[in-house]
Amino acid sequence: MNIPFISFDQGNALLDWIEFTEALTKGHRLPKAKIGDTFLYRNPDTLLTRSAWIDGMGLAVKTANIFPGNPVAGKPMINGAVCLYSDSDGALDALVDFHLVTKWKTAGDSLLGALRLANPDAAEVLIVGAGTVGGTLIDAFSAGFPQAQVRVWNRTQSKAKDLVASHPGTLVASDLEPAVRAADIIVTATLSSTPVIRGDWLRPGQHLNMIGAYRPDMREADDTALTRAQIYTDSFDTTLDHIGEFMIPLAAGVIQRSDMLADFYQLDRFPAYDPSQITLFKNGGGAHLDLMTSHHILQKWNAQT
Image (tube, rainbow, N blue to C red; front, side, top):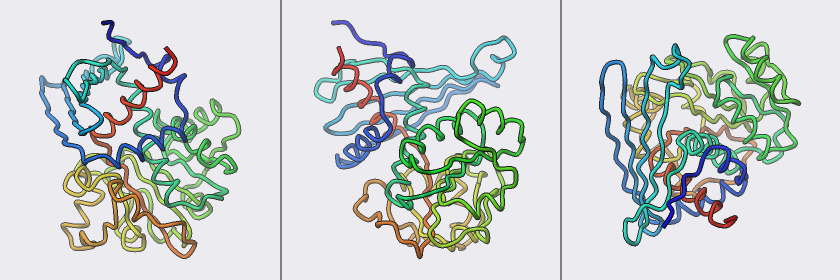
């Protein structure tokens, strides 16, 4: 039996953002995933292994090899792959490109949150951060909210201009505060350790969707934003005790665990859009999403072969 290796270009050509969010929804109707992460270090290099098992879907092990010295030699800093295994007998079903899985998982996770919480007729989407993820978010949110004008803000404005130049129809936001105030959907994808979004800038009817913070010391929104908003996330297990966005205000008593209203395993508790409310969604990621994404990619691959 030939085990397929699905490359970035091969898999990317098969996928659609809306169909992918539907696949994530179906994945969260299955039994809750068992997940586990391991880290191995050889300073300054890191091997990260993320594993997940969903009964009825299968098993996945995603490896990320992070070699910070590679770019100097003209090589990618991060390499890896996802091994996807059969739920019935544990056999290897496919190898899937690491960057393909990460791209679709990350932006699709946030898009699903926005499709559930944000104004479906949003006229302005603001992307905060002009890195690789920012470009993917433009594609994802343009598919989810095709009538919206997408603007990009970045601390270094030249990077925002470069990203906008590669995505016709998008515009640069020169000043963050007025851009946040004007937007219906704000999506943050920064590596900031201090909040870049202030709750005083927000207004009822807006949706704040945050991706960047992934460490215990990182935050993208201040306490006021959290206390003013209805709070949702993709997974309580991967956010509440692991990411500073929630860990820091929870420890300080600014918010309580009861303020966390639902995660994707409780999608029926995500309310219809309410123009009187501010909603906040935190994208925490997790190996279970890598598994759902890889499984969907393999299904699309099998359907066209």
